[in-house]
Length: 420
Image 1 (cartoon, rainbow, N blue to C red):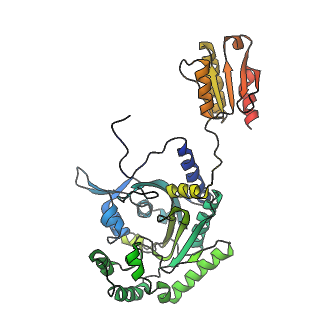
Image 2: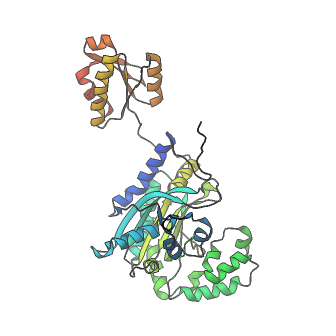
Image 3: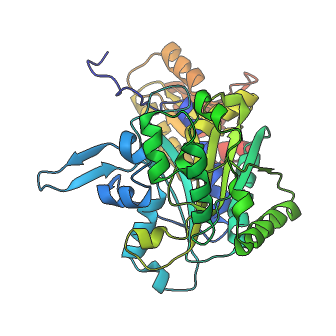
């Protein structure tokens, strides 16, 4: 055993569990690949100010959860706590918004880092699939992203999730609501840290999950009652588009999410089988973020779906993914000549797209067949000196136990047909 262990609040992905995570990532990304979204990858760390400006200086992410460091050159960096600010920064830096028709549609996959209290479904290192549609204000884009996420979850077999939907208004109507909310909150019995939030960004208080705070918020004013006509019409169209596509959702007037950059449409995917950490994904519109980080006005919308929590949701529903075997054929050579011959057959199989493995080292027949069983291979190829003298190898069906001799020159093609 190593002297070292994974840092607290993190985890290692190892076989066979890692195969499920890979399958979930592929399923969450698949609808995006088919809808005009191109892949983007950003550094694991960024300038601290990118997140302070974009995510919001009053958020828990910036004030309590970011991993920060100072380089030898004096630069202040942060491990990325979320993906949107980084992707938008990359798009602006590359001038993607000037190179073709808008919106710029991007998707990404990666690890993110927050210093949180570790618990099931809440880690300090977590994996997400995200999507951003940059440079266009259109209810159809908001609806598209919600539909694509719904499609991704259902393709995995998830059924017991809910979509919460709200509108946060815009720069015209939200200030009026902000003032009304601040007046309400200042009359509550709140701790000093929460009172500070009331002054900086009162919507953050609505996102406070503590029971003692939520009880006091029962009669808080709702943003929906303060929406201007334009925001009300925009939200109405998003809701109608979702309904027409058969996507069920629940209106949640208190949904604000945990980031300062959201405006108008905001949504969250929750799964009640996960307990307190019920959110499996979410997102919304962030029309002013580009300007916050020094770019031009680029209204945008996006989401991030948690790979870790999606896996937990699958477990909660008892859904088992139909994963392709990591190994379909396992070769067992008996002797040096057989090693050379079967290595060639295995190479042929791999080139043909067949998952094949090999009994390495000088194992006996018993040990090599145990390895074949552990691999989960459907077929095993066995060859010794007598087989090679006859120009054949033994092909064994590991399910039925049936075994037949096939010519060495035909072994790869025979297996390819059997597995087709």
